[in-house]
Structure formats: C-alpha cells, structure tokens
Image (cartoon, rainbow, N blue to C red; front, top):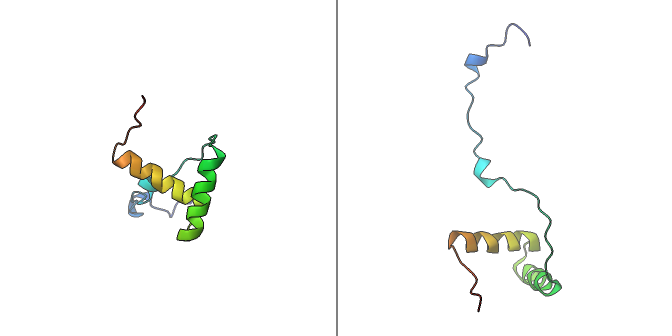
Length: 69
C-alpha cells in the first residue's frame, strides 16, 4: 500500500444492499408448479424465478404455514 493513502480519510460506509443479497440454492420442484409460475410470468412480464422468489418472500413476511391433515 502506498504511504500517501490515509485510510482514516476514506469515510467507509455500509453496503446499502446487504439486506437484498440472495443465495443461490438448488431445489426440486414439481413440473406443474414450474409451469404455473412460467405461465404467470409471461402474463406479468417478469422472470419466473423472480416471481417464485416474490411469492416465497410474501409467505415468509406473512408467516404463512401449510395445513397438514
């Protein structure tokens, strides 16, 4: 590192996108579910993976739970 750099004057700040980070995962999904989201994505004009992520985030925010009988 050069001597003329003064790290104390850099004014570091936190990354504003930290909360929006995503992690790639591999999942096995039913073909029917994939086709449903692909068809819906064509209607809405957004990628189906984005649509699935939005749906899952909505479920998580509302703390939805499946009912098993």
